[in-house]
Image (cartoon, rainbow over all chains, first blue to last red; front, side, top):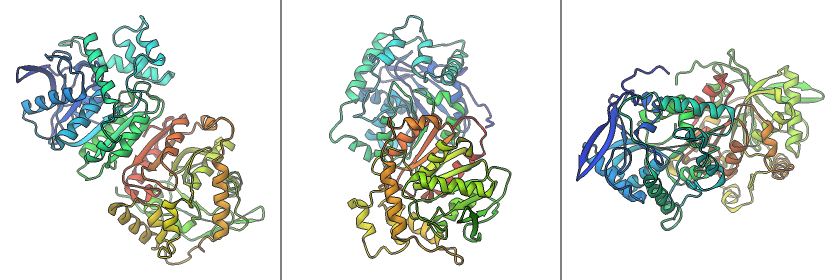
Length: 293
Length: 293
């Protein structure tokens, strides 16, 4: 796919938005006539964790907006210990920018916030892309203590981004090579980088996952009310949020297509950035009432 | 998508191939430099059950070959009561045509035969598309006696193709309308039509489904040996072969992508013929070693 580059997460400046006593860090780049695409980030991820191979092609045709929730990166405030709390900050941020309706790409934790936003204020989104995430009432969501993850997270060899290669990618030569390329892309940004998240971010976000695992009434019934055209994307070998969570999500959302990738873990969108951005851009460019790709 | 029409199942003549005392009915149309696409049909389906909205776009760029297995349509012989038996006939047919390697689109029953062929003679296929089907050891495969299906099949109002609208499509206004359009397309062929399948076809094929539900050793382990790039497609609301069978298939095949459609039942490929043929054609046109769309 040939794309005219209209901005990059490698070079876009970090901006600060003041809203109701909070200061939210964000980046905004790209241009085009389509609605902006709000990108909601994964567990402990900052603006620097958005792979330019994903954000930059999507910024051709629309603005891409990357957002640090409260207490993450350079955003002020306490990290909420619930998805609902993170949702309120995201709404306040969009209100502060004056954006009434946009599209959303929610990855992992960010996909949960996107679902809650769609529940709370349907008009905030036109189309949704939910990658590597889970519905409320999902199972085995980010249990970092389980051996398959703990062995990587606790390995002192895996400092900084190195652990992402292990836990976001499948344990195959091909997927691990894609993981190494992903980390190299994250490192392309040289200036104006974010402070990494500390243990306080992790512990509050893990508390939010535990709360999200509790069904709110009849399991998955809340999804029936989210009628937005939705594209659900997942890797079959995701240890952080197993793929059955995407099955439940796409089966119970009334208007969702599912695309699942082989030989991929949690970071399937980064491993297959070319395929993912091709399908995501086509999905976002559609004005069909259905989610059919 | 603009497609130069190079043949149609609405007009292609039915041909007969004599192999080892059997006479196999088939149709062959389309042209192009790509490998031929062998299409393997669903329960009781004949050549006339292939929707031209699916076959005709795929016939641009390649030959499409539709095939009546033994005892179906105008093919002679007894209908085998196992997938293995149907597989032998399909192999004999390809050998008789002199085709050593092709691509395959296996729908429902046809997808099971395609899997068995890939197991038995890996070189027979380059790429596989498996729609609305199940792996050996799958569950709830074509239990026509269950109330959700029996109520339609036993309804005397549902004569001929009318039952397909009920059991291949979801019980929504949109999916039922797609079903009516599907049947209208099947009726476009006016001459040289096939005899409909009788109860002997149905009973032997149901016996084959029951045998296919039995795992052969460790459940789904046999799929690990099928390394062909494979596209698995399914509707979320398939009552005939529930979607979890496609999950098992795509999770356990080492090189499969999954595309699942909203508001669709068993006939998702017919309901979304434009989307399906777009993705199928792109998948077949790829020479990547992976199944990534």
